[in-house]
Image (cartoon, rainbow, N blue to C red):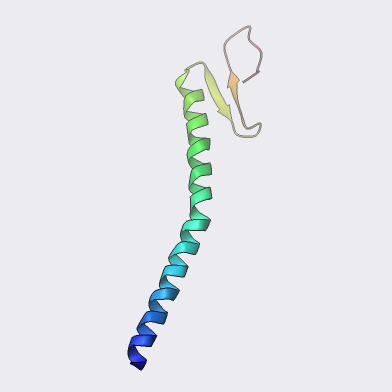
Length: 68
């Protein structure tokens, strides 16, 4: 009986650790996916590039302003 209680406690600890990892990792992954989507849509235009310092899409066509 004592061994079964230890196994149950270890299962609970494992579930809590997995839940903590998921709770921490999910916002990080969602943020990375949103950033990648924004950069990809900028680069797919062909006449723009992503300026890391400014954090925005910059138009490089002649006669245009850098309004992202």
